[in-house]
Image (tube, rainbow, N blue to C red; front, side, top):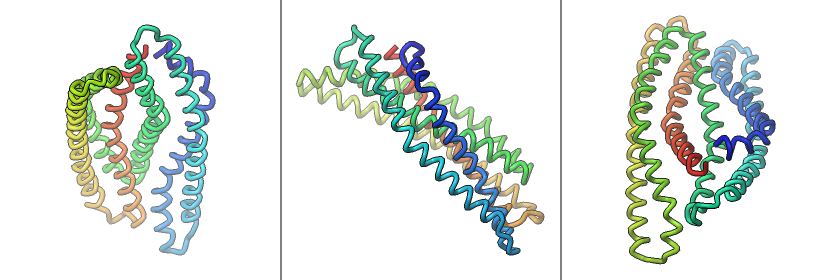
Amino acid sequence: MKENILPILKIYKWKIALIYVYIILGQILFLLEPYFLGKAIDGLLVQDYTYLIALFSAHIGENIFMYKRMVYDIRVYTQIYNDIVLNYLKRDKSSDTSAKIARTEMLHVVIDFIEHHLHYYIAAILTIIGSLYFVFIQHTTTGIIMISCLPFISFIVFKFYGKISQAMKIGNSHYEQKFGIMDTEDKNLINTFYKRRRKLIIAQSTIAAKHWFSLNGTKTIFLVIALAVFTHNSIGLSHGTVISIYTYINQMLVSLMSLPVFIETYTRIKDVVKRIS
């Protein structure tokens, strides 16, 4: 990876940095919205519109930054993909045509990770940290409950990582044979290839489903516990604060659900990069 991808990414480092500035600023405004919403609800009950204006401004600002990111990053990442592919084809003189075609196709996974998944994970991390902060400043006990779910989530992720990694490697190795088999025009070989491909895809999907099911079950348990805790003695909480806390709890737990996607994507990227190195 150091020889094949990082040098090219460094060429575009300032353009990539600008993309992340848009993402971070947009996500900060997104995190402020539930807090402003709670305050706006309490304010509207007494005819105070200050936080309603703040909420509207945050939404507008978030949309502007997200729009600027979306129209700018596609121009950068398509050029990065072209540079990586051409650099790989220039260096690889030993692999057969089938493997080269498959690997250039799999390189889309790398760019897709940088363009979409990495943005999503950064936003998820900011959401987890920001949501915890706003929950803590409004209801400390609930914040402690939310932090206590992290060891359980980490255990589930660690348990499934090995299985996901192995399934991904087997699937990619099988995919590299596709173009060579298609070139033979042997119907039996082609039929066998696609039957095997189907079984591998089903196996990968089953592992991912079990991973998601375990995490979602954990998420639901902690969501119920957190709701029970902060509503048990909510005499001193305003209507707006209750809505704000619930929104942050849900945002954090939903962001934690990005872990199955991250593990699957990470193992795929790791294997693809290893193949083109």
